[in-house]
Amino acid sequence: MKCEVYLEVLEEYLDGELGSEEQRQVNEHLITCASCAREFAALTAEQEIFARYDREIEVSPGAWSGIEARIVPVAETSYGWWMTIAATVILTIGLLSVFLLTPEKQTATRTPEKQIEPEQLFARFTEPKVEKKTRIKRTIKPGTPDNPGVLSSDVAYLDLDDQDTVNHFEQTQNLLRSIRNATVSEGDDEIDVSYDKALSQRLLNENVVLRRDAEMKAKFPTKTLLTDLEPLLIDIANLPDHARPEEVRAIKERVDKTEIVAALIEYRDRGTNNR
Amino acid sequence: MKRLTVDELNLEGQPGAFAGTLMNSSADLVTRVCQGDSEAFRLVFERYSRPVISFIFDMVNDRGLAEELTQETFVRAYRAMRTMRRETKLSTWLFGIARNVARESIRARIRANSHVDLGDKAVMDLSDDKPVPVEGLLSKELNDVIRRSLAALDEDKRLVFTLKVLHQCSYEEIAAITGFSIAKLKTDLHRARAEMRRRVSPYAGVGYEV
Image (tube, rainbow over all chains, first blue to last red; front, top):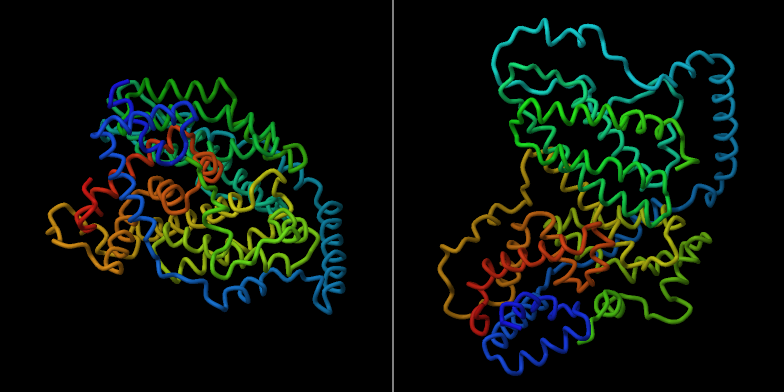
């Protein structure tokens, strides 16, 4: 092997990440090659400098009390049980009254998706064309609660990873809806998708983390949905800041065809038990 | 070459760390915490608080904030410990939470300031134009150069560099903490090393000829 090949794996060798056979080969090469040995010595010296790095930071003596105050379970306090019972009774009465008195409200919250307003449908024909560069028009505000009338959201009962996933799906859904509802006219030279692109890059990173996590925790429906989202996020993230109409149209069509927005809504409505 | 794991090199035997006995192995502590033993969680905190605060400080470059985020990390860890998988290493799991907490804080600061400012205006002053000192700097000054150079790295590179070089995590552990693929973390690590070398080498003095 040539020196370049060894130099390429020198950092992995230093990190102890090479397999035993590769490690043996590098070992032997370093004995015979002065130039690579110098490189390795420099890397080792560098490592030693960073090993001496002292942040001069200590955990303050009061840190534990701060944590302890936040983690003492309510039930451990003298009035804890009474508080728990009272809260349960109040919650049960509240839920029952919501269920018995306002059934139509519940069905209303099941409506799967916001319909496109008629004026949106005709927007491309009626909007005066001011300039060639158009910006994707967003119809959904990020972070808008879906069911503001619901007494309490499932989110409150989810563990942290589930909350991250729910938030991620909500943001992704908003992004995809924004792309799907974008008005792309034949006359447009280019469309400014810089915001959507940046958002997609962020969501893509998040998606990869959550997918691995779902896989590790055997949450297969979640993992499948995250896997389905990834190619779309990649494509949006790879758009140029000013995309050609056909590029945006192609993604719009894919969002429609794959019915991914409906899948996200179905996931949200499914609740925490079947994820 | 034996690769030291994060537990071996960094976490156990730190000043203030609880002496590792069989009864107090990480797995035992986790089990006891899940059974509601808050004393066991105090031991978890004693054992892991220093590496966690160091890691968070590396990420946010702010002592006060690092302490605050360390507390948040342990509060979250306590609340979520029942969801931790048995095969997951406690240190890796805690670093994962710390990473999320630090990331949220960095994101919040980006939103608030519309740009990444790690609280140190001198960060960007570390350029190649600076005069190269004739002799090696005092360790305090070198520490300062390393701290500012770290803060100047972009977030992903800072994350993998910190975990690998400063905390000696394995690639596998880094992938579990960050969710990055091995290929991505290797690329980021290589670039981070090159960037750190470029910034630190002029200040490192004799014996560091890279």
